[in-house]
Image 1 (cartoon, rainbow, N blue to C red):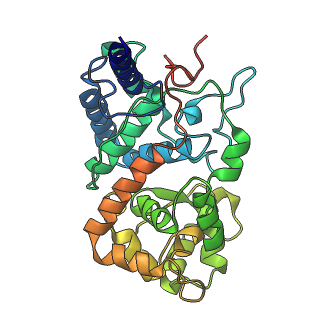
Image 2: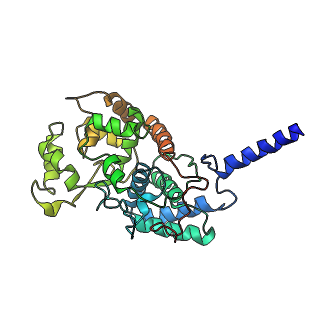
Image 3: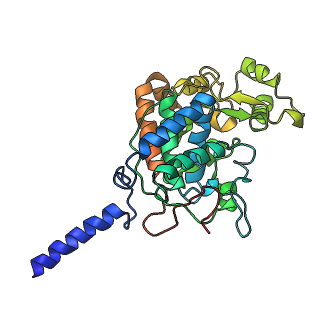
Length: 323
């Protein structure tokens, strides 16, 4: 009788683990409930990038900005509503994060085949991976089973998203707060091998920083005036060499003092700390090292405080909490 009870408890424990009750994510979470999920998200992400290649960087950034604010829970997708203040107006998000309509489109396609099953947070995680791959970067297995939050945190969006003017000590501390080492922080920063930044985020660097290539700065000044708010939204690529290809050229730029924003260049500053310069040099010289460590860091990031089991909900519309 005792052995039967033990056997039953073991089976129950195994069931609870795979059902998410213990908060564990699994790559196979939707293998029965939504077996076509991966192909649906991949196809929809491909269509979005085909329509606008820059969208790949935007989807990757959405996942990052989601996970760094109260965990990977889809909170960044919520619109302001009565009784709910979203995160979209946070300093690091306002007039900057984009791709919400693409997430809506992916969600619609997923709902068509698996209604009420897949979270918006999981869609973000998959779209970030697929975007990276489609732009030439590494792949990784995405653990799944996240659920969506029913609230957002504007205050944390303002405090926890790394600002473009951060120094190296601030960057290391900010990433450490989320459980990352300085090396993992440098790997994740390599996401800036794709995408663009607005003039308002690099203006101070090109006019006031000393750790910058003067020709690089002069070229940027032609479209980003020192005191002209009208140029705030002017875009420049993070990686001036291959702005729409996920590779390791970002680290070349840093070594040449051509990082677009101050916080990126802080990873390689001959006039200051050298704590990350050796890591930058390793990634610069070996793309496989960068790809492998970036992929591992992305899996780790996707595991920041996910809601699982009975926590949260599966939002039917990623922008609003279920009524």
